[in-house]
Image (cartoon, rainbow, N blue to C red; front, side, top):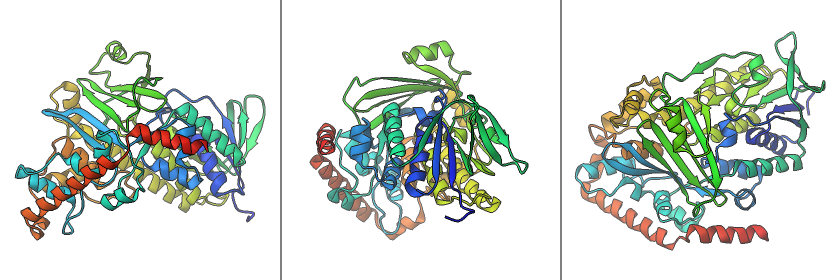
Length: 491
């Protein structure tokens, strides 16, 4: 290791994000000494507390060398194939946003364009029925995405529904197995160097911890990163909801690969069931729904104030904020832990020397913010295209949009085109699933469709739909798959 290389990292935070960072750094950069200063998890640290996750968590595990038997069986997690949205637009009962492909590209034209044309001719089945993941989930069955029969049909992916406490303990044990060290205490002060770098953090018991790099995973208060600056972008002008109620109960029904997001007059509720618990909650606007009435909709829940936004520069000098210390996002579409894991991956891949060169940090911040902003756009999309008549939803749809989302919607509403942006969390299939699911259809059909006849397009669509139905029939029930995985994990 070079004398200029980072050799010591101190991570502040006691939740999933902190221990995930410790495990990733120790696994990928084992020469670095990692110390975790364990703090209580704040009630508003959503990345540490919410259980539903995106498919990227599986890739994060694979990079660490963790298998499903570790993360599902031992930590009591369940599989997630997507979200069923109920009542998000007038006159439409529900739709599913599932992970992976919807249909297949035909004649170099995106599948959703063929569906849009067939829909105008009233010859299209619901868009969900052309998704293998959505169809498997609707049948309460499961196949791993690497299953050969399924992979020939369409690509799809799955996330997890984790139990945050079990998962945190698993990740802590794994990080310490890899050599991470643990230190309890409270952060009493941060000692700065003359050049603006952090020299050490001072704990309440008088101990001082020095490091080349400090990682702030302490939640929205960003206990150490906030000592450098508090420059942030406030998103409250975009987001209608400012309150969140979270509740968890022991498992009350069979686990499901779909969570449910149901629109209400003043916000929306969710429910998700894993093998060990049921999580539920309410996201709402205090301007449109009284707090007392809201709390009556979720038994035993904690009421949390939402302040959506992100730091303008999550990494400054030798301190980088990750998780809720860097960005606060409501739980719609479950981007919270994904953005934390993505930041950890980027931190490991772009680890600088001890001088924390400004050019390198600028690129980290550019990439991280680009990803955060597009995840924000995707969440806002659900509100922007809803046509529900209640005041909350009218307020939501009438709010100003970020320029990037406005551009995407203009392209879609004209010809059903979806522009490319760097650092996208959600695929174009995901964007199409939400737009079509909520009835936001384009004015015209893309002229590229002239390369394939309506009859040929329709035949290909029906063949694919039939093949999906056949694959679903052969997939094992979810309960059977989980039992078999438990047997494998016990060996």
